[in-house]
Length: 299
Image 1: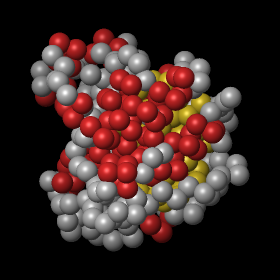
Image 2 (image 1 turned 30 degrees about the horizontal axis):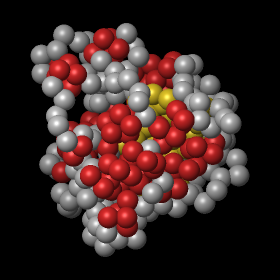
Image 3 (image 1 turned 30 degrees about the vertical axis):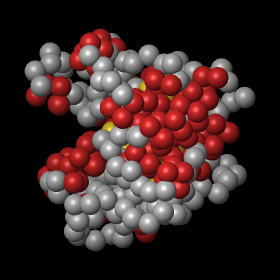
Image 4 (image 1 turned 135 degrees about the horizontal axis):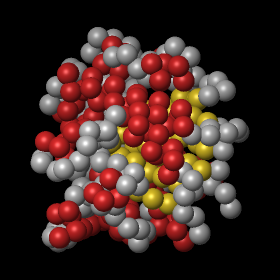
């Protein structure tokens, strides 16, 4: 079996209401997978022949608002990073969190056991020319990939269909002057499905959800939701889900509540689509995901 992990920054589960754009924005693919439900708290527990929706606690038993550095470290290692360092940490990982990623990162563990894994995000040329010094200068997923000894994808990889830009559509790169073509989210999803022929595990990170949610930019947030829905639709349309498990999850809430520009303490979604959903173990918190993925991959 193969696994695709689509990680979306800053998406929680809240009740359907006007301040929750996940309940106000059309998402035809997600609604089809969830038998008419939107990606809201009311849909948790949905289970059918296509998909299962669970919720994961992002607070990690630590007071305060969940944050990206500790949440993502917990998600990608199975270690309760917030409890390990005694607080939630925002932004990029600290030295202590970097050490956890170095020792327990899911990509490194896969490589050590002979699995083939890839981080699908593309890195711009500047990353390869002048890498910043110090581990705090790197995002969680960058450290995850680095400690696994995996290559970082270039613009050439992206143009050849081997990777995707973090915004899925290449709009950010085009705005920055890079000579790349606009990519439809559905086509981008199809490309991800095609890459599963070469790997046991594929990880892709999308961060614009958290970025625009902090700004409370409703138009941009709704565009992100539409992009995500079409991206998932592209994966599902092209992928043989009889032998592939698609996982969609997040690190903390934000997008689902327009009444605040801060992160929320809401649970985050864990959407499972396709194979490997038989006899699911308890999946209740961010720390449960990495062990589950490693257990589901072929031995």
